[in-house]
Image (cartoon, rainbow, N blue to C red; front, side):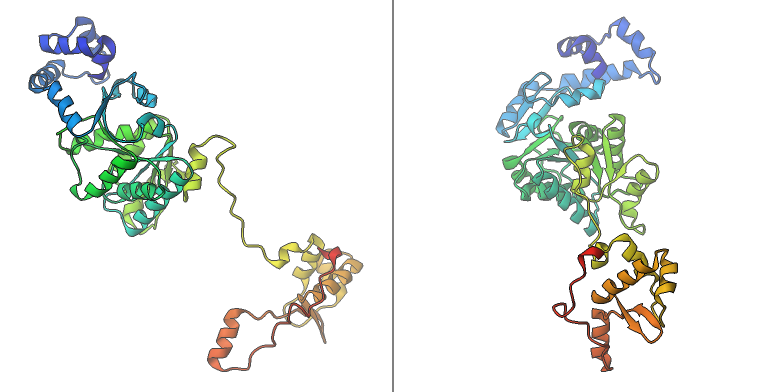
Length: 394
């Protein structure tokens, strides 16, 4: 149907179907397809559906449900849908206050399992909040599990969100999401290529997944089993050369097996936060994930030669400055100077056998001493009483 409309336009396609006679050149071109369709069967199906259709009633039903019809060329039409080629929807019904095209300029699809685990729902909600607070619109299918959690996260952040339905925009499916869809209508937009009054079918869920992938700059799969509609959306994203991310989960969870397969086959990028996804789909150099550094410890402030001397000091017994200098690979003067500074900072101490590391009492040891009523270890010196570490060792 998409190829027929692309070649002859919507009005001429209707005339062809009513006449039940496809143009010869179109029939010849379709015969060259890798898997040529049964045009006679298709034409009979279209003819029967056209005879039963009532466009005027559809428009009237849309008005009653406050829905609007968007077609290619309208100011609200998302032009990225044109990349679907012959699979582009002929029109979209929209219900909500948000502008569809504007909302999808910076958007990310968050998809996953309907039977999501608590982990998946939590992660999806975090992505919904994080993406929305950073100015990105969340696009999903409005289903149970990951979809619903992502939409709720976006709404909680006060941002618009896009729900792509597999039924008419006046049909609430699942029915328990009535409050969620009402909130989306006030803050975002619900869309469907099905006219009002159409109920969902299994096939329509798979068909609408291409729209979720096409509307967004990238798709992140939060949770997905090996057989999952979310993987179908991921496949559409790859076909459209859109960015694809996957959230890793427990290796014991079957609900994350699909994500792990995408990562193992290098079809998706591992993302663990909204910032990771924004870096993946954002503008090069502008949307970078903040670097997470390991916690700093006082030892990090030591210069290189002092660190080497500290590494060479034994834990037990002791060693002389010459032995430490050889083990550290530094001169004797450098070792002596470093040992003096390390002793002043409380890292090492002098024993009868030479220099050794000073025992550091931990909070765990303190708790153990208290619980067993054993004599506690020597207390750590008060930082106020420890001489400052010489600047020339830093």
